[in-house]
Length: 564
Ligand SMILES: Nc1ncnc2c1ncn2[C@@H]1O[C@H](COP(=O)(O)OP(=O)(O)O)[C@@H](O)[C@H]1O
Ligand SMILES: O=C(CO)[C@H](O)[C@H](O)COP(=O)(O)O
Picture 1: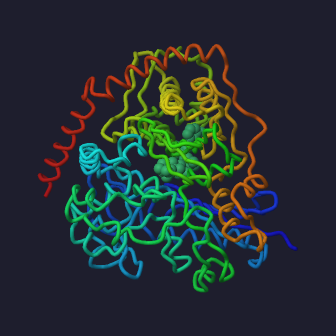
Picture 2 (picture 1 turned 180 degrees about the vertical axis):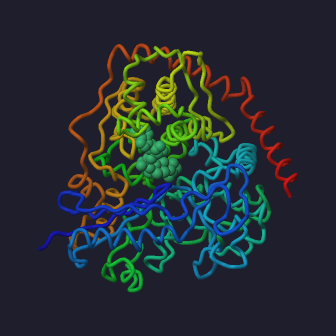
Picture 3 (picture 1 turned 90 degrees about the vertical axis):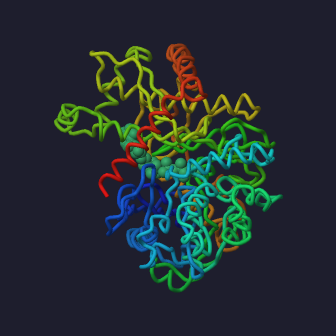
């Protein structure tokens, strides 16, 4: 029998990437990246003068289709393999990235009459404008003693589905009314490929308060939020929810033509980006924390029991690997903080020197920052540039750098920012282990681990744990391809289970990062200081960050009104 292949597509924040993977070894034959033509829409709606509010982040649904139109034919062409031998497709996506569609599955933002309404567009995972709804949801759920809250670390994020839907209802009831379904973007793209409406258990479990045994919370809960949401789950969230690895359907002839594949190719149910990465680094058992490190970090670990962990994003049975409870926590900005610093705050001379050396500013800063010992700069930062997802679950928190003097150098600030994100991860690890979810080893994947060695050493030192790094630079896409192979099934040359696929296809690099004892000691002291700042600013000791944000929002509203 000829070699068989699957295609995995990873839909990130800025781009979608397709990889073509050989199934017996996991070898990545070809890959192709399609940057989203409209990128992240956070200022003005496309082709319009409609300005977006603070904390908005939207996307264009056609950008996702563009990835299918460009990247899939590209990997097929580059590889020269026959479409007959591609037996499965899997996709993974940022989440909760959601959109409203009509009865035909058409995104409401495609309609002339609705396209100027921001609520008709895709709300990206990092859309943070539903915080009021999230706060109220948390208050009502706590008052009612809703049992599901313990599965979500005691608080639901404004990034998740119900807060986002509620914001649509509050601010654009006409869009809510015209919405037939609210979709996770991953499920919408699968529906476009197969013609079937199939939701995936992973996104539904983590982001939409769905539970394998008890389903969604009852109608009384939704009525208590808002009587207009009473029947939400039976109407606008309806649809079969299927476990990961299930075949959602087969590629339609039309989409097969567009993608250069065969009609009938198996398509797996959608998945969440970070979660797809777990089997792709070979993690299918408990005790191993996988960190998907990119724009943000998602932390995933498996367990055999359901435990309550402060501030986790969720624990979902079968949510990552069938047969286990999958735990997820996360930091809403990591690479994004470093990007902010490089783009917005690094002095011009650094850009010039990096240019003269022919290296990227990140590399220049990393090189200089590596010359410092832990603690040597006297700086400490709080990594809340995009709020705090875990463990405080509060998007109203903001960033902080402490200890600057007239001598402070850009590379010292860069190092302090790297360290701050490592302390954020350490907080998450401590929350898990203190609640009885074991973590012995760390695995890292995503765009950061192979780009920044200093960052990885700092993480090993701060967490005092060895870190293994994924061999692939496209780990979620490889994981998605594995689920595509499982959807195709063993009889067609794929795999019967994700565990089997992982055993054959997962790969990590030989070189790992081990903690350096001297650094561990200093970082332990710095972490104690970080924890003091964390609790002071994050747990009500001083709500200055929130007061500043309120003043800013009020000023923004005034300025906006003045300019009308
Ligand atoms: N050398 C570097 N050191 C630290 N961060 C980097 C470096 N190069 C790129 N980044 C950051 O990595 C992030 C992109 O990560 P990636 O995993 O590729 O994307 P995504 O999170 O969208 O999947 C960006 O936020 C960027 O600022
Ligand atoms: O919450 C998520 C997964 O559960 C998001 O998808 C994630 O935080 C965004 O991922 P990335 O940093 O890779 O763009």
